[in-house]
Image (cartoon, rainbow, N blue to C red; front, side):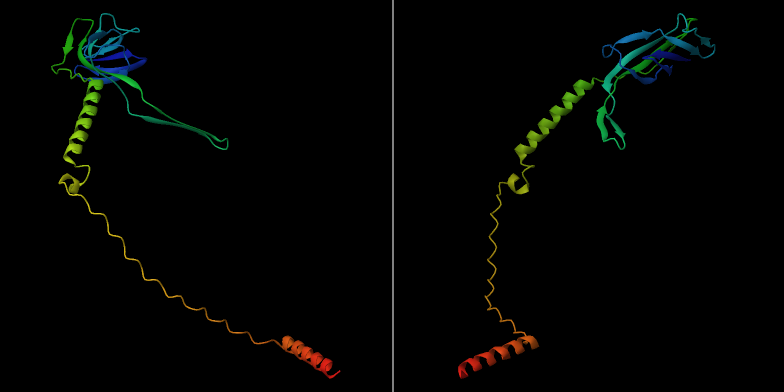
Length: 200
């Protein structure tokens, strides 16, 4: 036997023993309640609702109240310098379908037992174990390295020997450039002028 139920504005096809995630319901963890919004009950005989099937119900147990994985929300309008980045986690309720009751009075029950998980308690326990592990590691000196754990301290690294200084070499005088023709002519003219002055 199966049924189509409506909750949180959505429709779900369920059978006895199914586990499904629906929009968040304000119910206590481990509580059992009936969903009366049954649109269809199928099986040996089909009952179609108008809009719901009268005297039909689905018994469920709340097994988890949690949030989905993080989803990235990114918006962009090109050529408008518009970018928006965000994340979202949706709240949900996990339900275990315990039994389906048809309007004839027939019921389909599940042999499995619901597994209730308190996510807040599990998270707190996980954090506590991490703290205890870090303390144990600090006491054992695992995080400080093998040498520190055995009480051996590392010797200070020896300073590197100073590199031998290079001998200062005298700069070689740059070779003089060969005098150009113009400079030779001007030098000759100057020398000629000097000689004429002396003779006078």
